[in-house]
Length: 162
Image 1 (cartoon, rainbow, N blue to C red):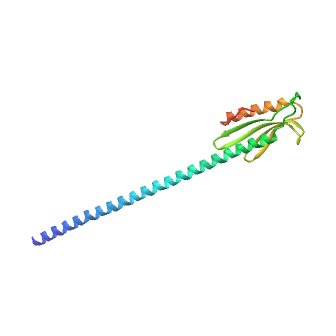
Image 2: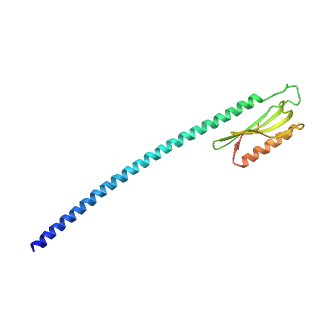
Image 3: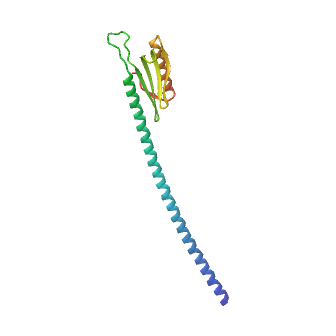
């Protein structure tokens, strides 16, 4: 009988000891989960900050590209005397999509190429001449208008040729 009681007391200690160790493990596990959650939140906040900084940088670069394109167009715009019936001013349309910028220009009377008009397309990789004409000035305007419409069909937002 005495042995049975001793055995029961020992079993009670073992049971209490097991419960206590489970509670300790639960607390440690809970602390670890809380720390992991805090780290996850900090990493998420840092990632959001990086993303916002990158977006601001891309927007700034896009704005700079538009300004440079407009300055370039202004620098190359040629006008003839007002009395000349064929007086023309270069036309430009600026197209934007996300952080990208494209500039479509109609350049009249380019002395470098001896053409009466050219349609140029500028993007980050450079400037391309898409069409040119030696005789008919309206050819380039028609091609540029159609190309601006095509860009808009592809999801770009373009200004009117001005």
